[in-house]
Length: 91
Image (cartoon, rainbow, N blue to C red; front, side, top):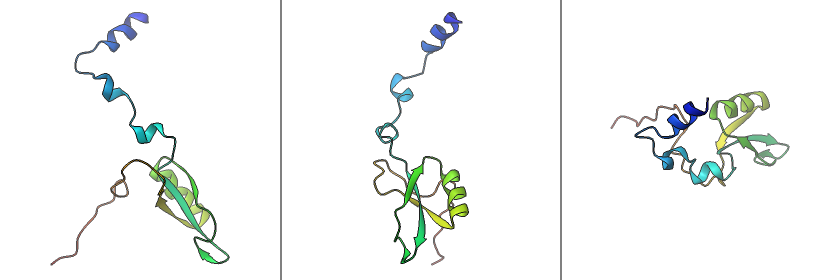
């Protein structure tokens, strides 16, 4: 077993920088939150920010009757919802 671990650690083409998580991933701040409505309308209650996976956020949003939104405190870059097909209207 130890020989396999040593051999896999010295594989060519595997950069140790690639194996390290990004700064945003190491921050521990989840990228997605669930925003629910409160007695005074949307946003009147705190967001539930604990989702690192977009699909889990969508499931929780469906169960809580809310929306999955991007966490504004997330230090990483999120360009859009994962798997979403962004389209532009025809000109």
